[in-house]
Length: 190
Image 1: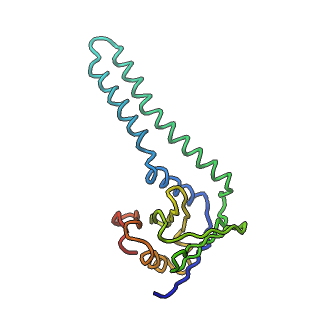
Image 2: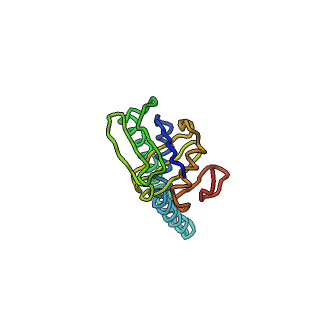
Image 3: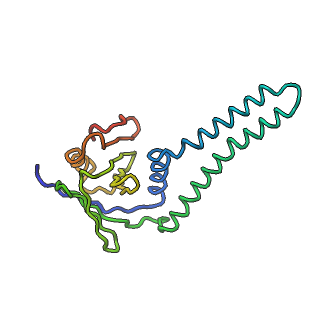
């Protein structure tokens, strides 16, 4: 295999970060599950109160309170998540696109090199990657389960297919996932 070298200078803005935050929190970390279970359980209790209300109005009042709590707390959770993402956008100054890091990929076993604008450098091995997730317009390269690098498709100068080809050569298929609309869940090809 020839030793290909692909460099991507990544500019991140609020739109890219917001999309990644939703994917990371609600898909990868499954943070939607507990609020959904809570809403379901509280709604089920509310239904029991409505059905078993008898002749008094207490069942209806209790059912309304349970339903309000069951739907209200998950809504508050989603609102606080949205506020957290907004605060992170401000902290990282992502209102306008800015250079976040540069990634360099090669066919070497330790072929992932990352440099940030401050000059800090990190190197990662292909076989230690957690996974690569492709969504519409971007690729999320997770070096661990809680550290990812974002690669917007439009910023890959060598072309998306050249990068996919390198990923396919270096990563086992079970670590490659395609979540683009109309595609299979597991990534088979570009």
